[in-house]
Image 1 (cartoon, rainbow, N blue to C red):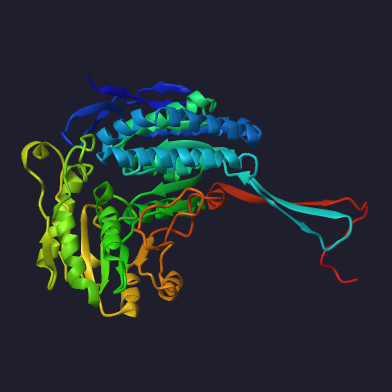
Image 2 (image 1 turned 180 degrees about the vertical axis):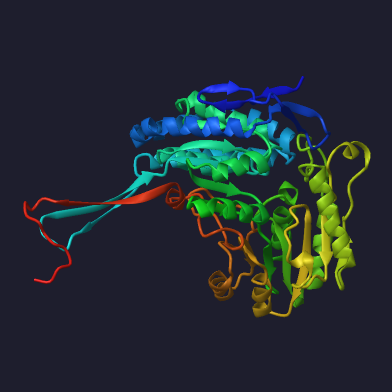
Length: 494
């Protein structure tokens, strides 16, 4: 029997004001997993009103106490890691080892942010005047709207919710409609840990309607969004005229550079993991493989063989390498890009390029891992984010040409380079235009205690994770305390 998922507003699980629901489906077999409240604008407004009313008491709760609650939430998530990882595989499809990783990343973020409850560092500095003290402190913004995607249904929400809460903000959480179950599980963990009623609220439903309301509601101070660049631009255009803070983490067209001196076995493993992990449905997925001419033929042969060996299947089944993509719409979009690639001059389909219809795979949303060769920077396969198990080999004449190709897109999230040459490695770290750079590793593997985010159309300059996250979810207040007993006029000539 399908689970029933409700909104959580003001400390209560409640149906949508309209009484309508939508279904959460298992992308591996189409099974209905849950009937979910389909929220309306009225539901969103109630959630925002509730969060606003709760914010004053929450900001006055000592930050170390808020940290203790976050730590307990981390403990609860850790205790439920395996159970929730299995639910995540059912709900969004990626293989069990990957959903365990998603869980662990959310746990790590929750623990990490809990520690910030005893820091939330400001600054002190000497005054130019005698008997005067100065410092800066962090202040919460108010009510934060957290709008999250389906590909990391627990980890990414923790990147937004936990820093918001530790800073003293309250939250209205709008998760992706494809992954409501994991969103509800996360909220349940926070409730059990002691997050007070009204401080964290969740509303489920269509992004256009309820996301739009979050972007325009006068009491939302910050919209924190992770998703496509197209939607991110719309949100920015809607929210910015009201002078709301907007934090965008958007698309990528990430590249792996393989130089002539690279360890090819290591490079192939890094490419396969980065291109086909999570069925290519990561903002950091490697959809461009830029290869220096000297190793192009050998790397291509190895990569084709390795790609063909990957096993498609239900992520809960042992031996599965690649699970389904999230839904039929995305499946069809991925296949359209295969058609585009076939039609483009010089590009060659090397393997894959088909919707999988064999046996039980026909019941789900499975796409065969796809590899193109001969792709050049001006092609659509070399420019546009596909968000599926498709990657393109792009020949480069030499190191400088490889860097030029890597930087030739509107995106700038994650890039990696395989070479043992320390000089070229450091030049690449300096010259690559992306927020994340890996040396002798794939394009995925960020850790929660360092900033995460990209350049150009990947984002709007903010960074999530690490202490940089606090700069999104707080604002600075500068304090001057004069204990001289006289009126001292700063910056005045004698």
